[in-house]
Length: 348
Image (cartoon, rainbow, N blue to C red; front, side, top):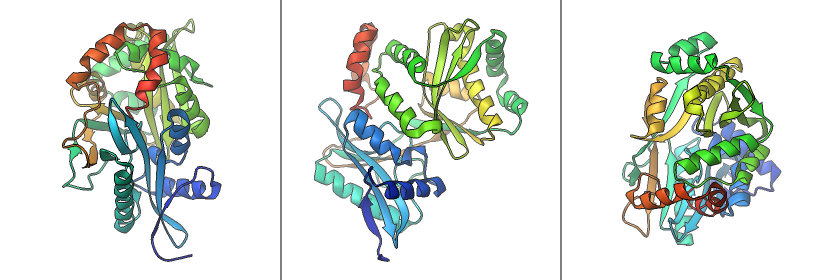
């Protein structure tokens, strides 16, 4: 055992190393749910991306982690990303030596792969001199200890929508699988003109993360599914991450009721933080979260550019994708669900 800091690559089959990685993640203040070791298995198995889950070790102790995956496509370019399909990522480390060593290794790997850029999705900024993506924010708010206090903390107009859902006799259920969620999610993203993740992705998340990945579905009093959300649980936080709804959901206030039910259940479990997740500034989801009384915090996605001059804009706000979005909306849902996974795997 050496006292020298070493950068190692995690093997998903090394149970001891995986356990040490996750123990570090659970204890490190900078770490998030998206730093968990299980993402390596999910991303590699579902999307076929090559993963580089790096960790800094000294004297047998993990001092930092950096999960990365290579995303390569003709349409969206070639990148090493920490971490695709995650809103948070980048380095989580106990000390600056470990953090810098992990970043240096990431840059070495990215250059060796011939990637156009390296992208690290930090919450707090690390490099003022690196190019940065500035369109995303996150929304996080304290969950109060009493259920009624959380209801009263919701601004009046939004609170009225929650009460409307309650009056409509809506019910919430914890689902054992992703079936009802996926049907609502796939229909929803199709209406918005974007490809859906494959159903096997959500099944893999539930299988890999067990009780820390949960589906809540809202139905009417006849049992008809209206709205659903797949959430992650990490330490004392709940993160509603993927969501979908039927067209009837808005009229019945099912989406408003859904997030209230998630918050109410989280309060009953003694959780402390409701993480509403990432949104692009100026979008409908951004306004919806603001209406709940959440304040935005900018996210710091930092880049090393190797074969390009500007930060990539692979998101629906990019004008060059508008024709593709309009075409996707007109495509039959069955076709979109078949073709979508081939496209979305490259978006990350």
